[in-house]
Image (tube, rainbow over all chains, first blue to last red; front, side, top):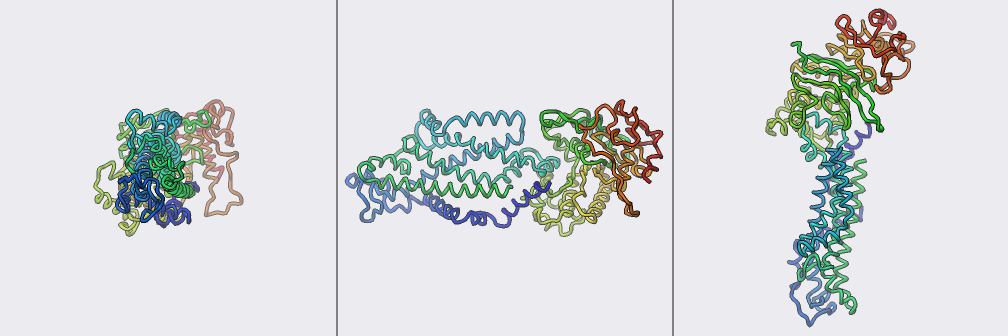
Length: 293
Length: 331
């Protein structure tokens, strides 16, 4: 009994005493720094096009692959467009894709996990085997398939990745949901006459929230890399829309010609944001584990 | 008080899968509870008390095999599902041993108490909160409005158990299953909580199945007491006679094992051997025979039936000749 009692009280402390700011503070310096990077990227995703110093879509072929000069801090890309402006404007399409993937994968995965844990028995067996089958398909392969069927674009790629990521979410959360399902308070709710749906939605899922948030954060990093790769292959965001993945792809010739800056700058943006998401996600995950222990 | 039972359990046998084999945890348990009646259910750990209550509230783990019948008034409890099961559970409320484990720690007391009212019975949130506050006042919690906004960890164990009792009464049940509701509390709190439960029970005309391993507590507040051993009912007796005139050697031994505050015992009497779970106990003889000082060869020839004697029931073959001696043996 003592463990069962210990579990909830720890969680209460984490929630009520410190709130979300407190949780962030306890992730340490690396966690806070990562959160700042993510915050900046998010702000740029919303306001990027507005703060871009030049028109990111205005080509001027005469200035193609010219290094930093004058007010152009990062120089010009292969069509002579301002690289800094394209990076700022590109934040939007680079961030919104992963966001869609993560939201889709988390919603699907959480629902499936909770259904499996709640019903148990045959339903759980069917769901778990279905997840095993889905595990066999790599995300990028599904995305290529989706592009072949629905045409290249961010939507098809995001949907395909969301489906490919869903099993990872569902597997981790199923374990958490099973643990929560076994808590005595769930039995108490059942004898109070609460319905399964209401117990799942009002109690089990909210109590898994720390883990869900941590998972989503880590997954955002994966999705960003995969979507950038898909855009690099030409199956995601379509030029001339500014996008970090696309920028690497279209400025690739510059790397060979001695002007690596445009491709490199876009690559660094991706790496920076992905590392930030990974570090923060790992820290949050550790915390979620510690709290539920 | 009508003679028709409110709840009747007949020949309830429950098997649970343990490491691939089905193990019996309850064997042929039959019991009746009439409206407004308090029935005690006593026995050692593992005797099947809690399992009986869980089976009545359909809370057995997945994979449990259940035989026998449970009826509330005219409905067959074993076949209920969905919303019917939920409304049945609103009529048969349960109070657990450890209140802290049985409440979602991240929800406020008010949310917890009014959940069933709001989601099942369609009561408006304001009305539900009002009723909850009323009920908290009835279980002796002051400042009820403020308590509704507090979290479970802000309340003491005794306070929280009162909240659980109040929550159980909110859906106006006909039967209360109290599974050792005071075991986790200290003695003075225990007395308060018992007094509140007893008073509210009479006030609302509630029937109660009171599970405890405290024979005297059961005798004090229950009309009848059922003694369980190894998943079987071994004795059913009017509570006031349980101590002075037990009908089963096990009951007598339980009573003798309890220290008496009035006299200093040199050495507490123990029952030889250890308590057996239902699946360990011999299946085709008297389950208590291996530990029973009165066991004879006849006791090992088959499971004794429940023998009706003077308004009580005993699962002891020798009850007729042993009656009276049992009391003398430990006095």
